[in-house]
Structures are given as structure tokens and as C-alpha cells.
Amino acid sequence: MTGEAIQADARDKMRKGVEYFGENLKGLRAGRVTPALVDNVRVEAYGSPTPLNQLATVSVPEPRQLLVKPFDPSMCTAIEKGILKSDLGITPETDGKVVRLNVPMMSGEQREKMAARVRELAEQARVTVRNIRRDQNKEVESAKKAGDLSEDQEHDLKEEMNKLTKEMETEIEKLQDARIKEIQDS
Image (tube, rainbow, N blue to C red):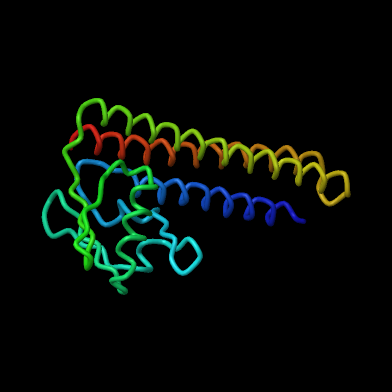
């Protein structure tokens, strides 16, 4: 594998890791209620766990309420169970046709817990990025041993991997800080 290919592969993998972190943040509750709050909820439907947004439409009829309207009304109880199993900490109410989620205001303690969860997810994302760097550095070393790269090229590629890692960690930090600010200010 050429140096450019290794570098491009590393950038792609790291970018996906950061994007995954960003997607996970959407599912964490901040002050405002959004349909993204239930994006990570899985519902046991027709024998397999299915994302909630594939079984129902989710809307925000009021500032502190989510309305989940299943495409198949018989799925209401399964949706209710899926929400209860999730880590949302919200008790759903159902009338047999729709499921309502009344989202209470977050207390100071809940805000701190949510901020800690954001920091935890950010650290997991940083570890993912560092693991990708380690794997790509091994790839560089293998390419050098195979005679595809010179010592200077190996050194330069490892330096580029470090720069790329710092860049991705900075991006993770920005996402983390923005989400924590949103949680604290709401």
C-alpha cells in the first residue's frame, strides 16, 4: 500500500469515527426536545430490533413533548417497551394509537450527568481515533519492511498521522464543548 493510500485510509476511518460521535450526541437530551432524541431507540418489531424512526413518525407538537405515531397502531406497546428499555429516562404514555413522551425540565444534577456522558463519549471517540492511528502506523511499518517506503517516507507518514490525529481530536473537542454548552444553557 502506498503512503498516500495509507494516509487517505486513515483520514477516512478517523472522519467516520468523529461522525459516529456526532451522531451519538444527537441522541443525548439537551434542553430542547427534538425527534433526534429517539433516533437511537430500538424496538422489538416483527422478531428483530428495529430503529424507532422506521416504525413511526416522530414530531414535536409542544415544546416539552414528543409524539410518536406508529405506521402500524398495533406496535404502540412494543414502542412503549423499547422507549422504557432505552436510557432516555422518560416514561411514555400511550392511548393505543400514538405514544406521547412528556419530557420534563432537566435538573442541575441531570445536566451534570448528561455533560459527564458527553465527556465519556468524547473520550471513546478520541480512543477510536488513536487506535486508528496505531493501526495505520503498523501499516506504514509493514510497507517499509516490504520495501515500499523509505525511512524518510515512514517518518513523514507517521508525522502526518500525528497531525491528522490532533486535527480529529480538536474536532471532537469542539463537538463536545458545543453539546455541553447546549446542555448547560438550556
